[in-house]
Length: 320
Ligand code: 8YV
Image (tube, rainbow, N blue to C red; front, side):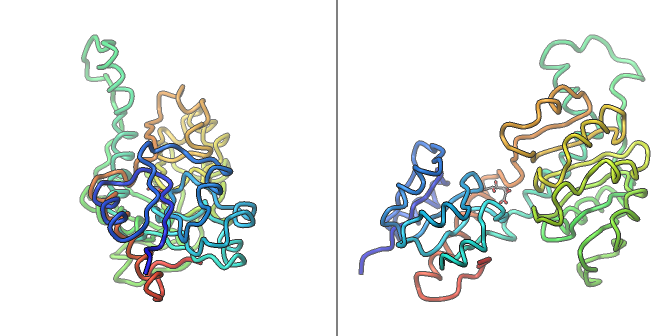
């Protein structure tokens, strides 16, 4: 029997591509070129499956135009907000994601964002790199201490739970807001707030760890920022859509929050340029899951889903 054809939209780790080429008729992308809509559809001609990243968008128009041969979209990502799952269902296309395997790597970036924003790492690094570091004094580059502070987590899901665990290593007190209360085992002593507005006044640090959903879009707005205590620090390694940029930028200019650590943005990579001009931002280019170990694990997880599908089984991570 011939191997199923898989269109792979981006360059993947060597070991993942080796397994892909062994088990499938893989259409790889060695140059890692970004396929725009028309090219993506053209390249999918005759393919049985697509293995995309969050850089490709599958809206209703794409599903209308995708060749009928495509039966599954096995994402190389945990988030699948780049896929219109309703349109996928209507088109009879199965969609999967890669949960769990990137929670540790992403939680590391959340800690880096907290530390980087609190300890003014962006400013400090710039001083050293531009040879602008001229002096030292007790008043030089004074930041906020992370140890022992109160951290509010919006979304105690897979990543949020690991963030809570890591933050406990910094003796932080953990609060969380979630659509529903977690079990004792998942909470591990974190304090649940049914209403986000009730939690915000206690958050010396606030970490956004919720998915991009209609209910979370623009969640961090001017009214909610105003509820944060003085000196609060906000970090986001989830999705840029959770933030109202105008509100956060106005807040950062006014000193509330006092700093922000951001790994994700609206309209990546063309982010709101005002973030770059603010000294109190610590900015990273969406690298939450970018470790060699996690990239391999994400690829293998996507392949496990494809293997199950083509073996006539239900893929473990089916989301549509
Ligand atoms: C990935 C992510 O780098 O998996 C996700 O949802 O946001 C990132 O960590 C990216 O999506 C890979 O496609």
